[in-house]
Amino acid sequence: MRNRLEVLRRERGIRQEELAEAMEVSRQTIGSLERGRYNPSILLAFKLARYFNLTIEDIFLYDEEDQP
Image 1 (cartoon, rainbow, N blue to C red):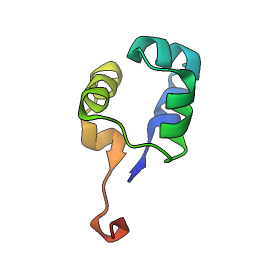
Image 2 (image 1 turned 90 degrees about the horizontal axis):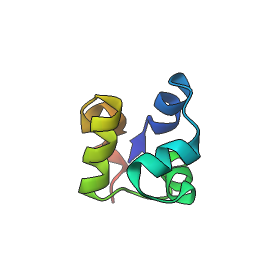
Image 3 (image 1 turned 30 degrees about the vertical axis):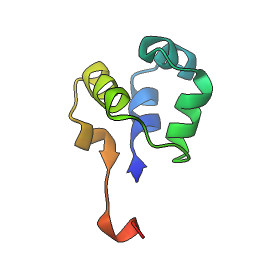
Image 4 (image 1 turned 90 degrees about the vertical axis):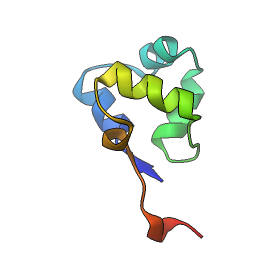
């Protein structure tokens, strides 16, 4: 699953540390999400969507062809 998290964060001038604090996760978690090494829990996905005032689908891009 790909995502637009880093692009959205940078467009708004938000540091990873700031986003992590707002989401109550570590900066490493945000970095892992941005690099596609970690898929968020549904709760974190909803929190991110609300934070950016977007839908989950606007942030996280699911492509069935990428799945095993």
